[in-house]
Image (tube, rainbow, N blue to C red; front, side, top):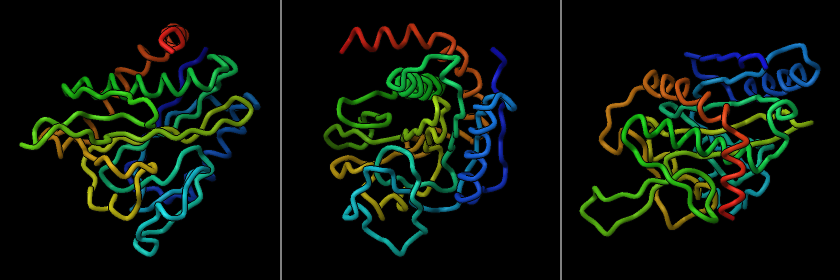
Length: 226
């Protein structure tokens, strides 16, 4: 199987433009006229509503533009300082198992964060990747550092994940992130790590193959644990 194309957009990408580009690329991948694509980008400040979004979770409806995303999940914030990865992968050739794919995305984020000595963890009943905070002089709490929301069309994936490198965390206050009110949000810089977007991109490139090259094994492990 040919390696996916990697694309980095160094200018902020408008959300409707990203949706249109993903739609076109997914169709081309399905038809066999374009390779898989991993698109790394940032958006201007905005909120997106997944298919399970609850109106009451939009706390500040006039603060930023709100877009219907078409992906799974609830409300999510996107903005500068957040590395967004839109993954357009052909699961027909990889492994037509959506649960396995989401598990692999989680594992990819966990391994990328580990390059910065950050322990990212899954939590039962909560989407995304979480960090246990012991650095605040308070009782331990868990903050979300990465969000995951996917969509699949004819077994070709789009949307993907976002990792908080150095976003303005106050922007998350306009929503209940992913419908979970009792936990916070953090970033690599908030954790005291001077990580740049370029650093994160390198970590993502270095860990992609080791995760998705062993995707079936990861799936079998996840299913054995359930």
